[in-house]
Length: 87
Image (cartoon, rainbow, N blue to C red):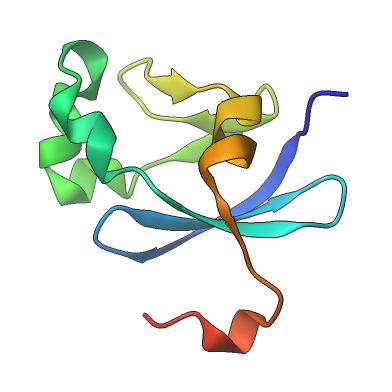
C-alpha cells in the first residue's frame, strides 16, 4: 500500500513534519533536494520551499515539483513524541 500524506507542517530549514494515512508521523529533511537541479532549483529560496501544499496524496510546490509519498515515507524519521520536534 502506498502511504498518503494527509498533513504537513514546516519545522525549520528544509525540514517538514508529515502525517501519513497509516497514523505515522515522520520528520523529513529535504535539504538534499536542493542539489538535484531542475524543478528543485527553487528550493534554494526558503520562502518558496515553505509554499508546499498537499495534492494527489503528497507534497507539491507551485512550480510543479513534487516528491513521491513513498519516498517521503522511506526517508522520513518516525516521530513518537511530537513535543520533541524543535522549531
